[in-house]
Length: 294
Image 1 (cartoon, rainbow, N blue to C red):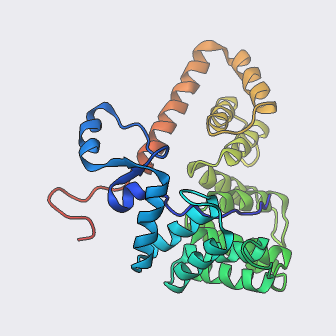
Image 2 (image 1 turned 120 degrees about the vertical axis):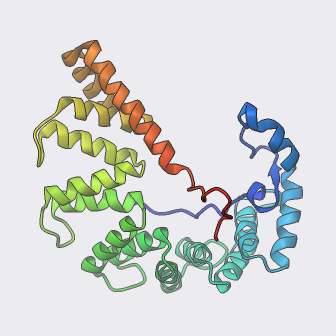
């Protein structure tokens, strides 16, 4: 359930930062956007992107500091250099960027660019969490569950998971669904809370939570069994990347039972759900004539 977290991607977002797109990083634009994007962007090499980002970081850009750390970490436009990556993550943290604290925490946790240090890792994750970073809240919860760099405190770990889930961390919500279903970490078994957390996680796009909802509808946990809802969540979980196997077998069994006409209706609800999900991912647009942030 609790998985070790890796580094946050810093933007690698030259496109967002200054109107450039790195070779190999640009997504194909829609036909009606191609001409406009050609005017706004020019494709540059990863080496050029690194040079630009390094210059901006040296000038004091916080976002560039974080991105430069990621470029050193991954070897984008420059040879990999974990010591330099940590150096720039620390500078981003010094600028009070929560992602900077988080990445410094990972460096100390796994010993990247420095010696492993549980206390240093915990302190940096704690700061990222204090600044409201959902990933930081989630990571801090796992440390309280395991006692890594701190005293074990399961109740506080559950509280942090709830805060992370409220901030939109889908894995935290799914983990809470498991905790409430199994009654672990000092929590009473509560199938309603479990379902609500799986639903929250699924609505955020978590494939495992979608599969878990399908199982709830299969077994009638806290609600009547519903094979069509079960099938919907199985299909969604697969489209979201959940591995094949038992999911596909269970979905086929339902399709065979309800027939092709009803299966098409379920697939239509799946398509509608995905369309709504994609719409929810679009940034809110300001009213006509109003500038963003006004």
